[in-house]
Length: 132
Image (cartoon, rainbow, N blue to C red; front, side, top):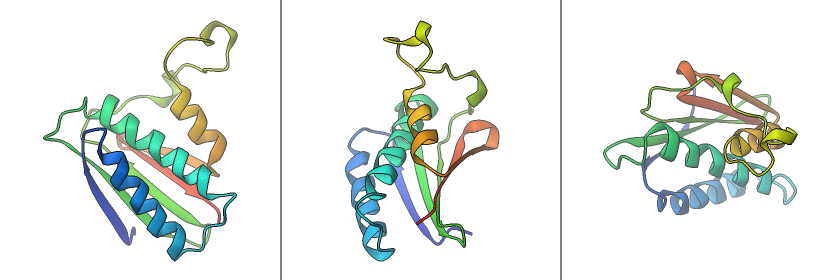
């Protein structure tokens, strides 16, 4: 069960709060300088996706970030109030036909930088695990 939480309004300024949260987490759990950027980029992408695609930038909706320290590492759960999506339908941004197109880069980055990415609640929650 997560033991740290952050509730963010659905606006771009929330990313500043997220960065502060990640800084505190990095200090508390002694995240090394090599792993910190992976966590920062992945969570920023997840929260941006939740704000823009999940909550449609509706300021009456929130994005929740929860943290749990597990035997495997640090597990972050990012949830929005949107209807969700099917991650299998996200285009591969590295495919030749998608180069230069928008979409899929954030999901791709999260998968590349984290040790595990799992979607729950019909895609409205993403769990991102980092072994630290």
